[in-house]
Image (cartoon, rainbow, N blue to C red; front, top):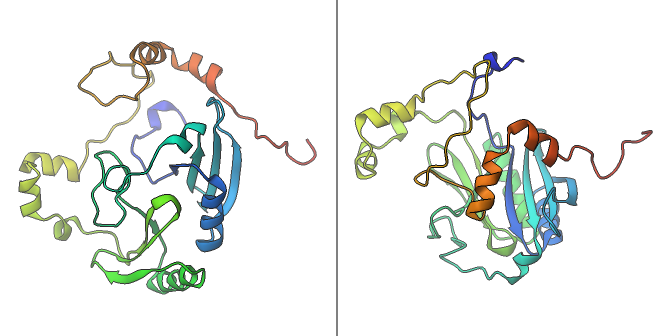
Length: 236
């Protein structure tokens, strides 16, 4: 596919990475309790001393775990690092809760039974109209949900004008949010923009970050890519 024919929009979650101080316990929970197959466990690419695990949710979506040595020295704080419930506060930018998907209400009820059969307490199901959900806890303070929706969310019914106004969203902004501008990549890549402190940035040391953002894309691709799996293919 040429660059000029590539549209730019996200289509789903490829993986969600969760920091852990006990990757085995997380893998055990997601395998035994939730039925997610372990498909990857290797040294994290380019990160000294870190392990990276992947548990399959589908062929194109995984839950991922990262165990860094320093994770063991960081305390979880309810209301800061973790919300603790689907209604609890946590620091801006942190994950409030994680909701997984099943296709039907029958599958949701079957998942509730599976989780309870492993000794894990489950709340629900609850019918939210736009979806039906069950709630439970995972290792290391994770707040988890499994949900199902019979149909796509109808924006005309589920965008509340009162909340729109309270959030400071103008009618023009709402129209733009509901129908984002399309983007089609051209024949030439867009140049790296000048670093603007008012934009979001990764939390690397400023000098290191400036150097990284200044590396041409093709140089970074050649220098930082790790394409070989840790175990060679059979017969290779």
